[in-house]
Length: 466
Ligand SMILES: [Zn+2]
Image (cartoon, rainbow, N blue to C red; front, side):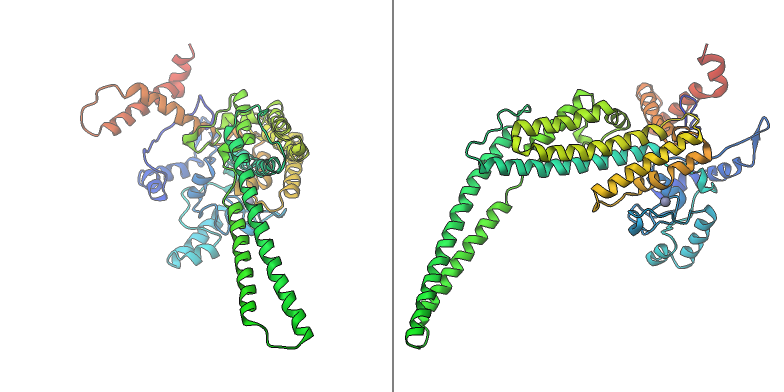
């Protein structure tokens, strides 16, 4: 399959989950693996075939025979240890020969977990004999994964800020977030409930203090008496002191429990509501039934400087309306993410396209990635770098040096677009009668036939472009 639409030509479809067993059924049993492995030795009109591998991180690691993202050696392109992902080190590159040799060792040790771990996290035989420098880092999924990660970190910071604002408002004499631009009755209710809880906590703590001071008085009295005339301690009084301390610590525990029971839920937080409202201003609507994740188109929009700037400004504006005393804290968050998004946006622009690039373009990208990673490691020291961030940091510029093109030319975007094209064809063709025998298979065959008519180079050149 050529990855660039509209010239993407699919020649095989397999309607099943992408488990390793299913991939073997679809690719090995049909002889496709052999044909693809042979392709690079053949030519067409005197020109050799260029064979590269693309797909998202999950499918790439399955094609290469690797364990999952949490494996000891999670990278598809090098032998970085999972504990070294946050370090700026260059690890030994993976090679397809090494993967095959690691697999043979794992196989000879009966596929034991320890054997997989000790042999560079290889769990099964790689499917293709394609060199690792022809395996395209998954640009679309790198951008999606990194943006999702950054956005989740922002939401987490705003969750903490929302709780701090509620706490601060509950301390104040008159608290009202009625000036909030996003209607958030739930937040007002939360602040009022914190106020009541705080009152309850104060009463319990005051009572506990009183009990402890009562106990202290008795202890002092007992000590004074024993100084005047040495005598055995009064057991009754001792018991009374013990009881007072016990009641005091019970009240203190109850007070702690009261506070710990309350935390601001996401739907109550006006800052998170405001984020969603602002995203909708530039037509980014996350779907709840997809776990509120972003799609590729959303990421392109969010990474436009005017959009992420507006997004972060809206958080500061909202904080000012809720509680002006907290504006400085919001501004610190704004700056932290503004710099992060700026760096990431520049990187995304430089690798997420299919155009030819110059050495200068790649230098600019490398500098951009360095700025991004320096800022990230400094501002988020306890956050683990994911395999996708590592791929951007250590492998995207290398692959672009190899191909002198943006990742769009060799990447998985073309494949991803096939989902949309196939879904549309399926919708169009599913009303047609095909008899009762294996209707799903018949439909899939019709979709493939129609797809080949649309995309076959000869038909495309002779008919479609007229
Ligand atoms: Zn790596």
